[in-house]
Length: 281
Image 1 (cartoon, rainbow, N blue to C red):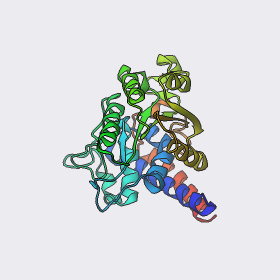
Image 2 (tube, rainbow, N blue to C red):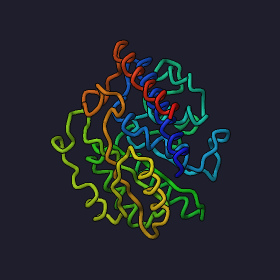
Image 3 (cartoon, rainbow, N blue to C red):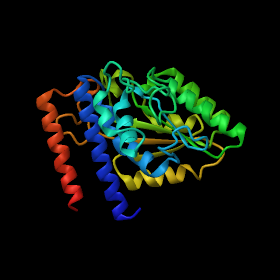
Image 4 (cartoon, rainbow, N blue to C red):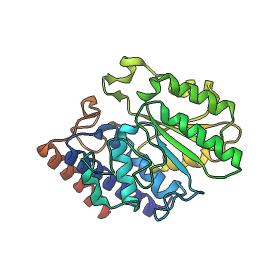
């Protein structure tokens, strides 16, 4: 990756974070914390990794992405909007009556959404089904799914992992957003999922641990995943909940609370300052 490519990804990620803050503030509800922690991965996937076409969202040969932690729809929507799937200004309609941007992704209303999600644990299962379907049909598109570290407390997740390993779904990449916090607090105290990497390895995955805010690390991990044969891939990305909004960082309370007017102004000022610095580099 060139320095210019990295700079552009950082600029786009900042715009995605701004979209998250703007949409949740306008809705007066939503989930900014985990959306912000995954913003860099959303950005890399939609602006570099995924084979998609915003002008043809249902393109049969596209790669598929399933947001298993569906409550982080604000992050997905912001990435899709900035990628051109729908107007960025529509982010301000999040969760409003009559809006196609519901609180959780709806594949029937949102261009670019491949699976309706929200009930935790189910997204990875549908991603497995998609990957197996591609195998049966002899298709070369890949399937990516993003889970929360609190979500993997769900038993269905591990059933899906067993399925993925059994069917040797090497066209599947499972990404865990390990920001360490869930709605009730520290994931290690609520119901520890650790060691996440060793558990995934025991289920037959090729596993990588990365800094989820480092675009070089994200690129290297996703490139490696495409070389793995005969087993599914998993990327455990270590992130900061509420990343790049100072008062939201590492605070479990921002899991599912929207910023008020004053908090919105502060968050947007911080992000605009970062954007200005990046654009001036």
